[in-house]
Length: 145
Image (tube, rainbow, N blue to C red):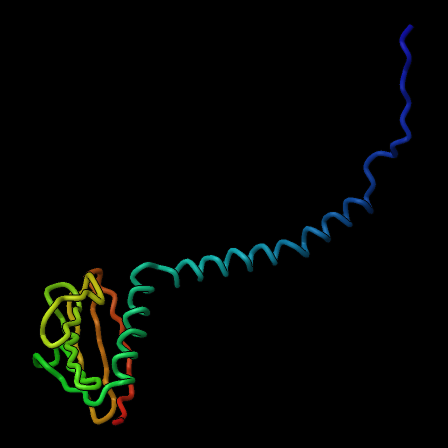
């Protein structure tokens, strides 16, 4: 003999669905904000942008402890002297390199189409054009020791 089961479920309730919809409407903007934040973060974390920021910080460390700064190669580079140690930071082929006492070859920045260094009083401006067409610029204040 087959038995028929009876259940006490009351079925679909309008108030229950309105509650679930309101919870969904609260959390959807948070999800949209999260994806918007992640999109802006991924643009900031682009490899070329990070390389430029690292170059800027490293260049700042050479300028901060320098005794003198001068433009070399008609604006294609700078020469800094730190405690009698001479560094040249200059455009070389498609990169920016650093040399100590005009020897060696340490790459600081790659895929560069053009890079200009301009010293106006105490203000040093570095303008770099990458091979993909992006242009970056950074300014430094050079103060005597």
